[in-house]
Structure formats: structure tokens, C-alpha cells
Image (cartoon, rainbow, N blue to C red; front, side, top):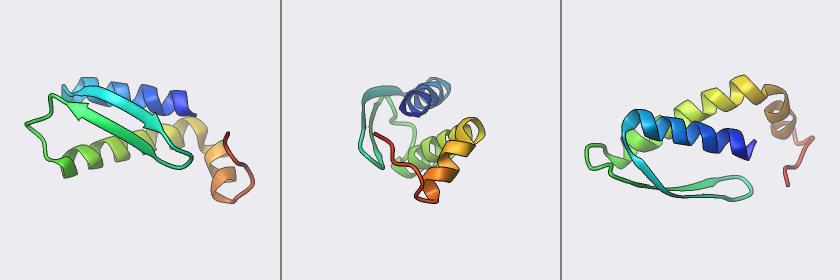
Length: 76
């Protein structure tokens, strides 16, 4: 799931013309540090990365996400 998330973020960054300087995963969150993004506000970038990555993950991993949401699976 992390790999899918990272691939999604890298694709989004390419489309928006921004550079991912650092990408770190926590147990239930992601730290994303971007560069070359002066043309966009923090809110625009957050909305774009959260929305697009959420769509990709739900489309590709819905069964797993559903189990996690129901508390039936813990990611390591």
C-alpha cells in the first residue's frame, strides 16, 4: 500500500511540475516535503495530493482499505 501511495504522489508531482524532496510514512499519515512549488498555495497542493492519492488507493486497494476502516487489519 505504501508503494502505491508513493507512486501516486510521484505521478501527481510530475503532473503539477513540483519536486518531492522527502516522503516519509507514519503508521497512519504521510509527511510530504515539496519543492519547486511557488505557483501553488499549500491548500491547493494538499487538496490535490490528498484527493488524487485517495482516489487511486480506493480504486486499487478498496478491499484492504475497507478492512482497515473496520478495524480488522493493522498495517505493519
